[in-house]
Length: 515
Image 1 (cartoon, rainbow, N blue to C red):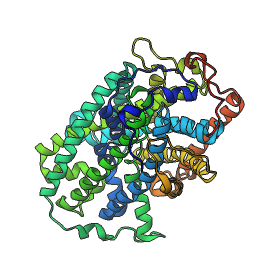
Image 2 (image 1 turned 90 degrees about the vertical axis):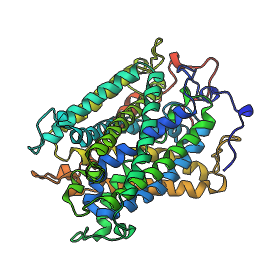
Image 3 (image 1 turned 135 degrees about the horizontal axis):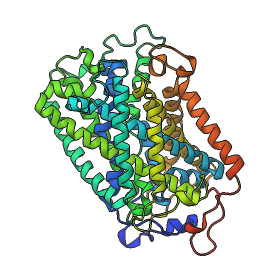
Image 4 (image 1 turned 180 degrees about the vertical axis):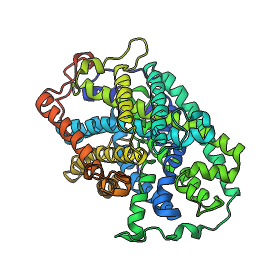
């Protein structure tokens, strides 16, 4: 990889905007740490590990840990491709603008649409994490029911999650500076808490690493045996390590984004892998009773409370609460920038309104509100779904993987045609770019298929059983993709162009052409 751009030789921050035909509209106020914090808070070590630990252990036992390095290697390939793109095109709505540049307007719009929809579902999925944590801190957080009835957890999760979404909507509406301050403070607390948790769990280790090399009876009776159980459990790790592109999506509000965004992407992913992997490993080696059924119900929260005691355990859970909050904030922020980017090209309904930047807060307010309302609507629609946690999170991750494929696949096509050129003097994969890109595409396609596979245990585990629930991932995502592209084809095809309020002075570039 080439050396980063020297400070004295870096291009003007707004040059990439003029390449797209945009004028600067968002305020550049984010420094290097703010950019890094946005990426790592979206990934959110404590949110993801605490939210779906129960799922991974429940399906594959301690051996599910190996899905963590597997997912990291695959996502690292994707992240490296994104680093090249972030150095060349550090603009808002990174996935949309990248897929547009690489694959043309059709792929660009569909990739952006899938990412917008995925962000709304992700916002709902992350909000559900409150339910796994807050009621274990205090029974006060059982606002609806008390957990005794089958639907209590789902209903209470919807209420707590909706409150969180209202909060992130308000914060994002008041401008990126407020968001960045809250996010950076939250990330600092999360990182400190995560490191402390690693140390505390390490002190309480009671068994050796051979624990994670045994099947412990999981996978028996399945057609693929333990491997099938492991593939299902990999959802728990896949749910954590994505969203690193947020660092680039804030490129129009960051200083020196061509240099800082690629660094932030890699730092966020690597830090999350190392710290999160140690938390999961030491938790499995330290929990008093590895055979306890509470591992697959109470999850990592149960491990912390039973291993570290009530006082220390609850202090850790309060830090998890903070991590979930800033993670939700980062997800919402990324979605707003994506919707703003598409609307700026007249790609969404009521584009002029969606792309309007508040003169007072210098941020798009309409997409903040719309995305928040849709996310709450998704929660409400699933309020009586006992499998709400696994269903919503599964669909969110699949859509993210498909959106990432809308970038890595056309990028691979451009490489094979010899038409891809990294930013001059910026981040470059050099000769390893092609194999890295190939692995990124194969990884994304394989994991999307694995996560969408119609497993009754994930999508239709409780009665009454229906075929459309089991095939829910294919049906839901298919409807979103087909309906969205139909709207584009009949309403927006051939009409995508930078709206007047966002257009740079001068002739600007040709319409929506690939590199």
